Image 1: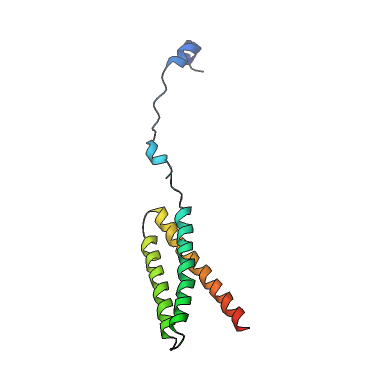
Image 2: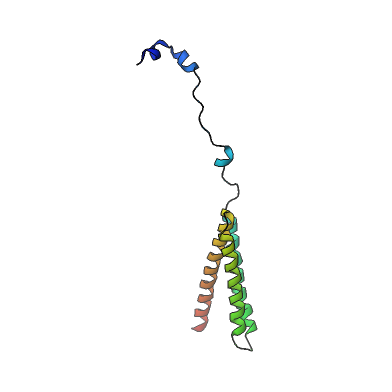
Length: 123
C-alpha cells in the first residue's frame, strides 16, 4: 500500500466524501404506468367484432342481388381497419403501436373464424 494510505486511520478514510456519481433523472428511468396490453386487447376486440359484423351485413345486403355489396362492405371495413392500424403503428407511442398490433391480430382471428364457419357450412 502507499504511504498516504497507510498514514490515514480507518475513520479518516471513511470521512472523505466519495466523488459524486452521475445519476440520470428519475423520469428517464421511470416506466410508463400504463400498460400496452389494454390497447392490444381493445384493438383485437374491435377487429373481432367489426370483421364478422361486416360479413353478416354484406351477406344481408347481397341476398337478392349480386355479391358486389358483400365485397364492398367487407372491403371497406378491412380497409378502414388497416388504415387505422397503419396510422397508429407509425406513432412513437408504445400504446398506439400495440393498438395497431391488436387490430391486425383481431383481423387475423376474424378471418380464421369466418373461414371455419364457411368450411363447416359447405360440408
